Image (tube, rainbow, N blue to C red):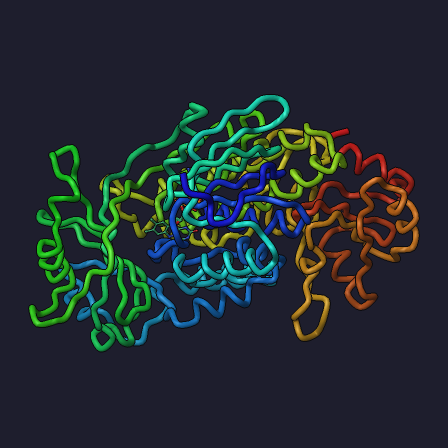
Length: 534
Ligand SMILES: Cc1cc2nc3c(=O)[nH]c(=O)nc-3n(C[C@H](O)[C@H](O)[C@H](O)COP(=O)(O)OP(=O)(O)OC[C@H]3O[C@@H](n4cnc5c(N)ncnc54)[C@H](O)[C@@H]3O)c2cc1C
């Protein structure tokens, strides 16, 4: 049996399975925590397909924290803005009926005003950056920061007991197998998650909304489209049901063509000549229009989520835990948020700074949110699995992706208890379980309160930090104490409804663990211990 190109470690604290958005972000978050990991991805590279086209506000906040928001923005810059859904007998016909230079087709003026009010609650925005452009940015950063990422390696099988996880890993090019152990396994292995299946974790939800062929192709339609840029074109005719996604609104496109296994159809029924004829039919372009198919990938649109995201030492994240239609733009975003929630907890438990019960808060906090996004995405699909534009309008503000949900778990010290709720807690005002409010700290609007979040516990004083410093330092995991510039304090106190003697205790993922009154100064170490599950 040939050797591995580079030896694998015999033991790692965290084994990440999957090198998509969730796995790569997990790598970066664990690195931020200073924790060693091994990431396995069975493919030789990151996604060669555009798939996800946009990242929401919360994802960008997380990538800002990881120092990658600008790099992702840059990577997506060549992609033109794309708003609006077109329908018609062909794309050419639909475009012909569009008035030119109408970039705001998606939203009404009322909605645009609502978006602006929401946007003021974050230092970040949504961005357009397709998956084939974004994932290499994450991979390169993780590798440059010293991570152990192995592309072309797959998890073959695993077993766990109370002391750890034993894994068999295969190098796909050589077939060589290797045994290793890990303290924890993070399954970011996608919609068909072999790890989830091996654990027999059931899923619930609306289920299958149809089978599609993702046909990624080039066609220079820049002249046809200019001034009428759009996001999606829907076609539902007796001979073809599909949606066309714009990639750069010039020469790259992704056609998602519905096919019907229940009628005996398979991807083999769509060889290239058939697909080229269908593409011309959908586009409504003349036969001489050059078209080139880059790749074809069958996929099933499903809305499913697990009710159990932790099984012993194994955690499910991203599509492994919840699958969605693409219409809410939340698939990648939910996975990014999952692993950001989990990484600091794994680090704290592995360093014996937190009780292992802290890990159970991952499920308590993230499962309801993953399920909510999955169901939301399903609600936006009609009976044929195509997007319902009126539902998209109705859900508009939610699609922005402000983290407006409220976590409830033992890691949130809130009166009242109850489960994590996706119900909007906007405006974010420092309520326990919500993301730290954003306030610009400089006139140039470059530095936000969120920029204090760097994977560590924080104590944000509403007035002078002095009284909190000694007591924070006495904690086993001392929070960094921040005070606002005096000019920003009135705005902060108004935003959070706090008094000068009060403070917010903020977790490493930027969520408020507790609101502290002046009488809590001496109790900070105890409160922190409680949030850490001791
Ligand atoms: C058409 C389309 C448009 C979309 N648009 C958006 C959007 O605009 N915004 C958004 O947020 N989301 C969008 N999504 C959803 C998004 O693409 C997915 O939710 C996201 O990519 C899931 O990331 P993941 O890391 O959880 O899983 P994946 O990206 O599927 O990664 C899982 C990885 O695990 C690997 N793997 C599996 N088993 C093993 C094993 N045993 N060993 C090693 N590796 C293994 C796989 O090879 C795969 O690379 C869209 C999806 C589609 C199809």
